[in-house]
Length: 338
Image (cartoon, rainbow, N blue to C red; front, side, top):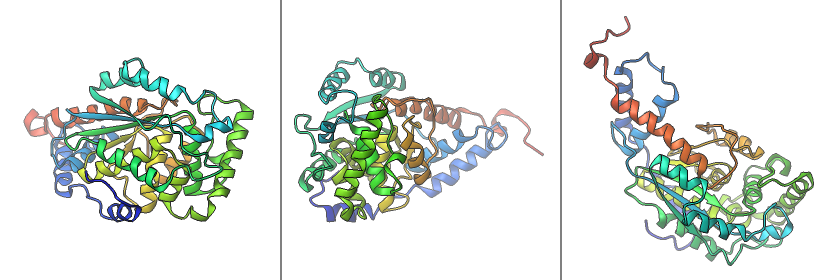
């Protein structure tokens, strides 16, 4: 994937997005109708298989090469005390990922996904968005390009996750900037803040909204002014996957918030994405409603790291297994419905 030189070029690229293969989708639906089961009896597994077929342009989809990307970044807004953990935990957890000790490492093994962790200038946190834009335009483009270039164009599917102390506050700020409402609609307890911490996060969101109110009609500016490096990189990876027609599994609240500006700019920009799970963060429920996305799982998870998306990859594998492996009525010698 080539690199973006300026925001105008990025906006142009987002306007021209590849679409799913309609001919393959028709063939996949026909196959589903011929398999030895009542029509629709496998519910969403059927639709997921058809979705994969259409984006992969294969009547028999495959998930042999799953790429998992976890982007990590630090946030200046943590100086406000919005997290129960100190900012240095981001770097410490990145090392834990690299040595195989985190939840995402275990889940990627189970899903047979290749994990790559990309740390984005952890020694240089973003600006505190209550005082200034989180990222200058040059830094925004650098992070977006990092996401673009990280995607393996030969992947069958892409899992996207993140790590960054304070990034539930940042995700909530992005959602507040994109969709409005009130800050309390979007904040949650994140790493486990108490009631006072929750009130603080709400106040911080309002301050950020007020500071950048003049540019909040531009979704990319929302992401630049209120987001963070890892969120911007996730947005870049989502766009790169769309250009390569790679199906994407977004993780929870933060990953979905990172991708949301693309959908606000161009409705349908996230049609190649499913949301792996519904986070227990309050704002994720409202975000999913606005994006018209139904998560694959709801397991009361809120870890991040791409953990929910990795579990959801097993659901996609189940969908592929039944779509590809089941016999048709004719093959099995089973009488069809009269």
